[in-house]
Each structure stands twice: as structure tokens, then as C-alpha cells.
Image (cartoon, rainbow, N blue to C red; front, side, top):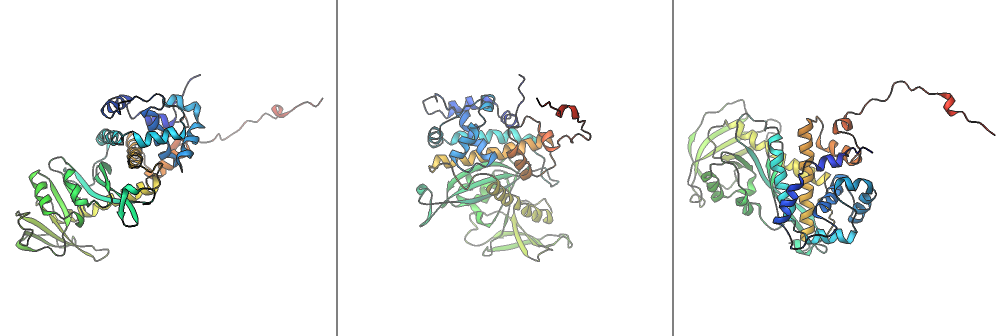
Length: 385
């Protein structure tokens, strides 16, 4: 009998199996799995993300019900205890590296950002995932609360997460910012929580540009007032130099842009080391930073990163990185197929049709029903003896 690939198998084919062989060697625990392979673990975790399974038992039972399809996925059913042990013991760094490789594969297909300049544009921010302290004692955040933070660098070409680091909830965003490396000439946009003039100097030395909102207590001296378009919402475009206690941390000239939002009337003040782009473009770049907030909201609402399959730190990190891999796979298919639908609608369709043997185009644009049905009444006839 001819075999037709399911939609799930088509998604898994985007991840070459030799990646797994290489990563397994790099992240080996010294003992080869006898029955439940790393690939089987990944297939189970990805299935639970795409179908929104409620618990570990729910996911194992649901996938076991498709036992005829598991052979073609390259995995086999597993006991719940074996699956839980794998999530607790196998290093989550494996899936972190797999996520990074998949991003590098998606990046060439991603559409560019909406601005005319050619520089890469990134947003850097963090979001808190709350945890129950009694179930996750290793994630202490406050006296009675637990939490972890997802520090994310969002690539505005396709709005893909380029780098994600997970830390304890107490870790400040600015302290982890130095760990992110960017291509030379890139522009990174951050909010006021990242105000660190020494880090700004570090970015400048690397040939990078930054855009940030100015804090109200900043002390500076105006060097020059630059010309700007009066009808763009910009109210000031200045060259300044820091003069307060922070002046030694960043002794270079900064650009200060004041902007008033026409819709809300709210006033904003931005600092940047980019002197070539127009003042209105600087304001629009910061407005584009909202996309990272949209990304955080999307993954929390549509992926399983707030209810976890295990209580250990390794199990939680593993589940989060597989959720991010799921996001990249959805984006990858959307780029490949040129789909004109939202990512949320795509995920909803996929979750209900994961084991169908159609193509993605047939799933999104099903064939119309037959307009005429030729019924033969004789086929319904029967004889009574």
C-alpha cells in the first residue's frame, strides 16, 4: 500500500535527522537510549505543543492512539514514566541548540523589515513566566512567588526569535544584554529598563546602533539643534552630551529626538547613536519595538509555556525551547507556502488536522464538494426472503 506523508511528517522533514546525530554527540549523557530515543522525545513534545495537550498523560495517550502513524514519524509509543524521566534528565541545551539551528535555516526565507534602510533591526526585551513556588522551588522570585524570565532578541525580518536565554525571575534584563551578539551595523531597540551607558559604549565599539527612550532623570548638555520636518510629529532633534555622574560611562555624543504621537498626544524622548536616519524614522523604529510584546503575548496564548509537563528546571527549559521550535516551524511553513493567513489561524487548522495526508495548500484551500451527486436507487434495494 502506498504511503502518503501526514502534515506532521511534512513538518518534521524540515529538521534534518543528521542535525540530531551531531547534537546528540555534543550533548550526550554517556549512555545511549535503548528504546526512547531523543528523536522520539522531540516528536512527543512537538505533538503536545501543536495540539495543545493538557498534561503528560494526555499527550502520551493521544499519540499512542495514532500508533499506525508513529512508524512513519520515526518514533514509537512510550510509557509516561519513561517520558517524564527523559524530560528531567536529558540536557535542555540540546533543544536550545536545535532552536538556534532552525532559526538560521528560517532566516534566509524571512521577509525583510518594513523600513527602507538595509541595516538589520532587532528588539531586545524579556518577559516573566510565573510559576508556583511550592511546585518549582528552584524558581524563587519573591517570598511567596516563583518565576523565570525569557530574554529574547527578536529579528524584525519575519519577526523571528533569534536568541532566547532563560534565567531566574530575579535576573535584570540589562545584566544579560551583554551576552547577545549582533551583526555589525545592526540596530537594536530597547525600552528604558535597559539604560546602561557602559553597555551603549560597548555597542558603539562593535559598530552597532541603539534606540532607547530617555529616562526622565538624565542629565545632559545640548550641543546642537538639528533641522527636522515640522509635520512629522517630531518636536526636537538635538545633539547632546551627558554631564552627570554617568558621563564617564558614555563620553560620546548622543542624538536626542522628541516626538509627539498624533493619536494619543503622548510625548516621547529617544536617545540614539545613529545620526543618519531621519528623526521620524527613529521614532518609528521605537514604535516597531511593540512587535516583541506581540510575540510574547502570542506564544503565551497559543503555545504551552505556562503549564508544564514536569517540575524540574531541565523539564521546564526543555518544554520552552520545544515551544519556540514549534513557532519557528510554523513561520518556516508560512514563508515556504506564501500563506496569506495569520499564524494563529494556521496553528488552529494544523492542530485539528495534524495526521491528515493532504498538502498544506489542500488544507487551506480544500477542494469544493461535488456539485452533482449521481445516486443509483437500485443500490439501495434489497430482497426480503
